[in-house]
Amino acid sequence: MVVWKITPEELIRLRESSLKCIRDGEIYQLRNDAKLRAVYTSQSYEEFKDIVNAAHLRSVTRSDKANVQTKNCLWNSAARE
Image (cartoon, rainbow, N blue to C red; front, side, top):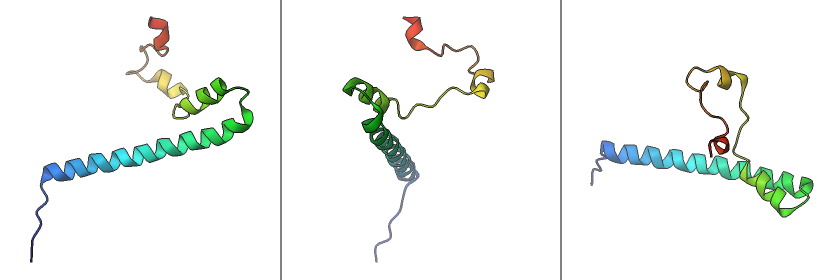
């Protein structure tokens, strides 16, 4: 009988790979739901594309604005340019 030894490095890689797969699945679901909604609500392809591309974003909450770590950050990175 062969005894398999799993190293800590392999466990770390497995965990990271599993978490990436879960996150990819969540993003896929969000984008797919956005596509199904955008098919009926968008007026042009550009609007459809924008809705799908922004599906994973969440709005900034009041607690995000009040958080000490994020209070003084630039929320609109396009304004910096």
